[in-house]
Amino acid sequence: MNRVHGYLLLLLLGLADALGATNPKLLLIEQRLNGFTDHDYATAVERLLTEHEQRTAIPLRPGSLQRCGLKISSDSGMGLCTPKPLIRALGAALLRRGFTRDGIILCDARQEALRLCGLLPILSKDPARFEGFPVMAWDQLASGWANDRRLQYENQVMPSPGTAGITWGNPRISILPKTLFDDVDFWINLPVLSDSHALGVHGAIAAASLGNMVNAERFMNAPSNAAKAAVEVCATPGLTKRQALTILSLEGYQVLGGPTYDANWIFSDKIMIASANPVIIDFIGLQKINAGRASRQVAVISPEPPIFGIANDGEIHLGTCKPSEITMVRLAAP
Image (spheres, rainbow, N blue to C red):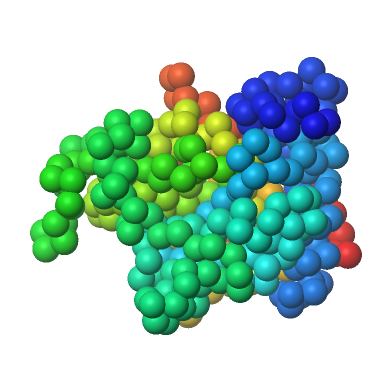
């Protein structure tokens, strides 16, 4: 298995079938939780990761770079961000798999959002760490990466009037995170779920794309362009080849008014779902959002948001959202 560690994840996805394992893009794991404490998450996350590794034959262990990334979702604020017990549980599971604490990088697009969610210290002079894990904010690093053409996503949508100046000069360019391209063996996406004016569903695809680059706010008021931009970024080879998994906790999800947090529309289920396929994660998210809306006599999201069609249009194949093509594994609460 050590030999497998050296391969890029893109190659591993193809090897899974050859090894007699489940193709990661066709595997969906539902892990029940007893509750939302650190202990509840710790036991459930370990079981979920072990199941994923056994079924795909892809170990979530250090490779040549000895580093991995945990993509946090913090933009909606404290009320709707990646749960801290999930972050702790996943960090502990990766430490058991051979990573050092310095080798597990927590990251998101905006320093301010990370700070407001308690994932960075209040005082900027304090080390940029969360319980010993290094934390990176892309907006503090993007200027230094802006000349790397691999990291430039260009789209004609302009920022809203009054948006702070773009230090690299071109407001039509967003900057992708070099760290997830070059500096980690793999990264894991940890989105939160809400509805969205721009995308319909703000979940796995949104977190890995618009939530993963600087100068992406320009798409949030441009529904005709947002889905295309999100899918194109998710399909960027340098970014997608190292994305190993998405884990979505339904501890808190919002069915109306998202992605801006509104406590009146928050629902909760004791479930985590995980897959290397962000499309099926968001498709299930859509069902959850619509069920929550229906229970409150609010109009459901219909027709289906275009992001699902765009995700598998032409040469882009982010993953199927057809349940008949998915291997579904349901794990009871530990």
